[in-house]
Length: 90
Image 1 (cartoon, rainbow, N blue to C red):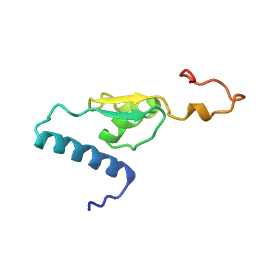
Image 2: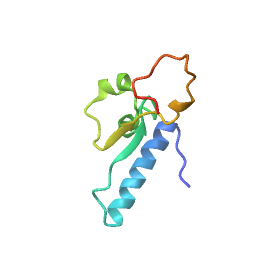
Image 3: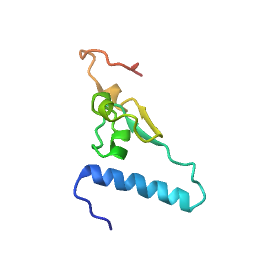
Image 4: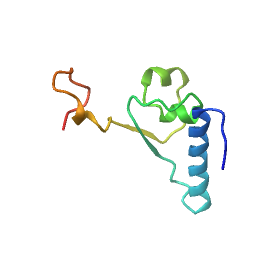
């Protein structure tokens, strides 16, 4: 068990743990992470790399490499009367 003081620290610790695991098991090139666009993961450097809000990230770039952002997964639930979003609907 590993306790942290905040969500940012928890995200940062999880990223470090995953990197360390892959390095120790012979996969040092496994460092990429996938996060959702518009998702907030925190303000530590690793968590900022995962955060999908460009306005928050911009002031701290360049960030650690490896983050990829994908569209929100539940756009099919949007009612038809809402304005269109930046990605195609299914």
